[in-house]
Amino acid sequence: GESVGLHLPTLSVQEGDNSIINCAYSNSASDYFIWYKQESGKGPQFIIDIRSNMDKRQGQRVTVLLNKTVKHLSLQIAATQPGDSAVYFCAENYHERTTDSWGKLQFGAGTQVVVTP
Amino acid sequence: DTGVSQNPRHKITKRGQNVTFRCDPISEHNRLYWYRQTLGQGPEFLTYFQNEAQLEKSRLLSDRFSAERPKGSFSTLEIQRTEQGDSAMYLCASSTAPGPVRRNTIYFGEGSWLTVV
Image (cartoon, rainbow over all chains, first blue to last red; front, side, top):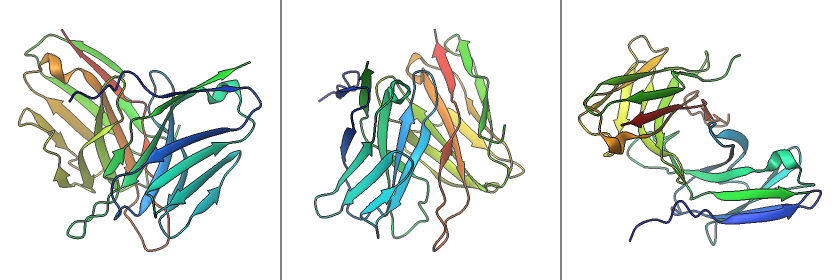
């Protein structure tokens, strides 16, 4: 059926609380994962990435967790701020054995994060 | 500004006209990618280049679409005989070529919005 892409999952979080955004990826052969933040009318902005040989990576106020067993990725944002309000996308780099597919990203549906005061 | 640069940022065109978008990647990046994003969806891969060589084209890229990167620096994406279904944001991204250890983060530009009326 048709994708209901206009109705993004929404996460409402109070300013100062921690946010957790979840993503299920599709391909067990994917070897690189990226989280992007996209504000209205702008391009995706890199947040953090992780390779498949890791299960956790931390950045400034953000942590990415990778569970390859269940093909699940999560992004944790500590002390969420109003400026964190945006759509967040996870992307996987699908590794094809026969071609060099670096950068051929497959994106999830996105999660709208709304930070309330 | 040393990020990925795209222009024009917005283009309104009549159905049947041709349009061209330009992308200037981050200067040391030899990989350049084109994606398309419609409202409420994640970006979808269209094509990519390593230097001046076009390595792959998605099935989404009909014969009316052509991309070039003649000198391995900037790239153009041309859409001929535009249709209303071509209305979307066209995103350019760039990275270095993959290596065994180094992360080759993929950075996006701000996108070029196309509206076909």
